Image 1 (cartoon, rainbow, N blue to C red):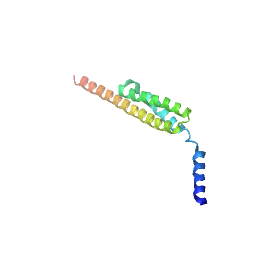
Image 2: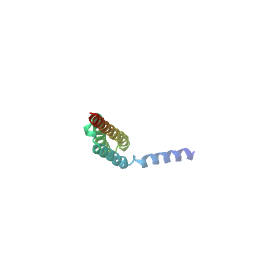
Image 3: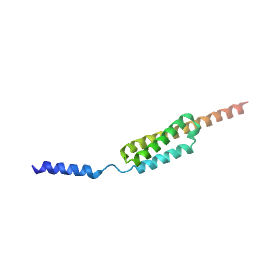
Image 4: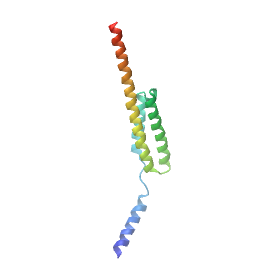
Length: 114
């Protein structure tokens, strides 16, 4: 009979002792770095990349507010999304840059043929 009550007490103690998850500061730093990378490769100049960069920036701000409110689990999920948006912005910006370079190379070849 003492086992179930001991088990219940242990579960309650663990449940109240945890209090919540720690702030996802590592994920925040990773997302900030991803946003910075997107800005550095020129994501603001390509419409699709700019959209995902904006979503990532908004996610960072929302996650910071959630962390201030001690809603760390939700903040972590938002940061994961922001990081993915920023990485997509990097990829889209790089693709746009590569397409522009390829188009310039085509024009150079055409000019040489004339």
